Length: 178
Image (cartoon, rainbow, N blue to C red; front, side, top):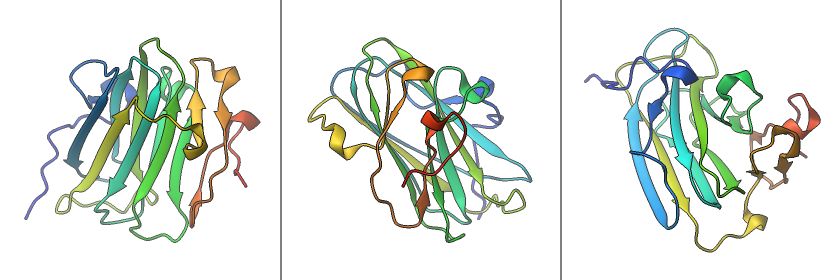
């Protein structure tokens, strides 16, 4: 059976698929999409706008190959990623980003899904990307990353993840959080 991907073309942040209809603010929101990495060098971009301080969880599951996710701020790929999840076992382990949005101003974020190996693609198996948002029970100790709208003022906090590498853009270049 074929996995159709109704979101193509969404191969750049400029053509990103909206994850929600409009900005999300106070309260709780969830959404799930299914798509595929269906050809060589395929990349899927999604966008969402957060309009309150709150907790964002991005999960990637049902992976046919080793896929990764990255979260970008308003500049999309013109700026370093704010957060990422990468499986080092080169397998189909689910990926997750936990992120705290520290701004009440509407801020657009971009999510990039891609295969670790550009030659690993299929249009027969869909991956699932899930977004959960809540402005309730905010506890920064649970989150790896938070952002207040200023790339020079990003914060990152280490939370142990087995078999995952995380981007720490506080270093100015990509680095590992230990």
